[in-house]
Length: 397
Image 1 (cartoon, one colour):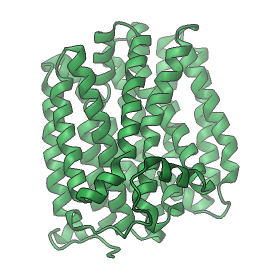
Image 2 (cartoon, helix red, strand yellow):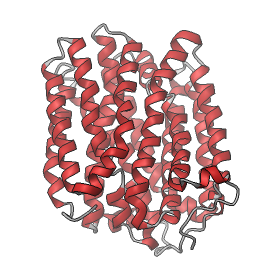
Image 3 (cartoon, helix red, strand yellow):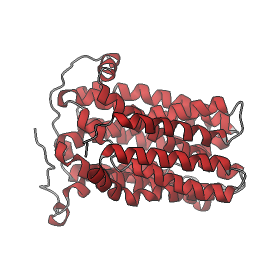
Image 4 (cartoon, helix red, strand yellow):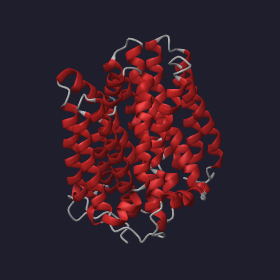
């Protein structure tokens, strides 16, 4: 099996930094969904009527996303990694068409396609990373991947809401579809359509089988739990900050700007990756979780002052960005080569689980408490995650 990227069709200038070249694919893949990141919850709010019903809809869609992700190893074994990636792109295009509709049924169906496309792209691209990046280079590659990923998610939300609000409703959906075609072209440019996956340890088609297999491995469970806490916080930030901005009188565009400014801290991810290599992954993760928790509880204490809360939210995102410095390295270092497709399919459900657990929790809490409960709850689970960081191997860099 090849362990390095195929650069036969890449220019010499691009060859000078192979990791950044590969990471650029994650920019395109995430920009296609980033454009719709804040548009989707705002349109859901407009169609559903209030924050609680919006949470319920997003909860239901996330359940579908998790179930879809668990079927992906079967799909990849049947049609191959490249064709599974093409299917992910096709469903993303279809979801953009359905999400642009202002009909609740079409919109909800589009959300299901959107959830599947994100999961399928995540699994197929992660398998490409595991196949082409040597383990020893993961801690150097992963900050660049996170940089490109979060940079796309920084630019996208503001542009999406701006295009919809100031130009015309369908424009962000059109742009999202156009970026999908660019991602397919770049995927082929890197030669990733030629990736051959190692033989699978299990030929079974039972998702529960490899779910149990995953749960039997403590290192994989730790990787999942910590990335889930991080994902849940970002889900809270992306979904509920625009809603808070609208309800507090700041306006939709201001909410999208807060999300974009917060995620713009991604520019510091390579620095945090270096800090992780210098001082250790455990210390970096503990610092990130504690800082994010402390700042989020300050937001809770200042929700009656929207301007102060907005500034604090931007700095909360800096704490969460510290966590992005190692990305998914804990998983990459723990997964066995012959279990990659099955374990990756389970691992990537952290995104949908986060998007399920977060609105699911808040759908219940908002039925009994005022909106600030969103921020106090997020602070609580982040400080709990900080405690679990003690199980990260001390020497991991």
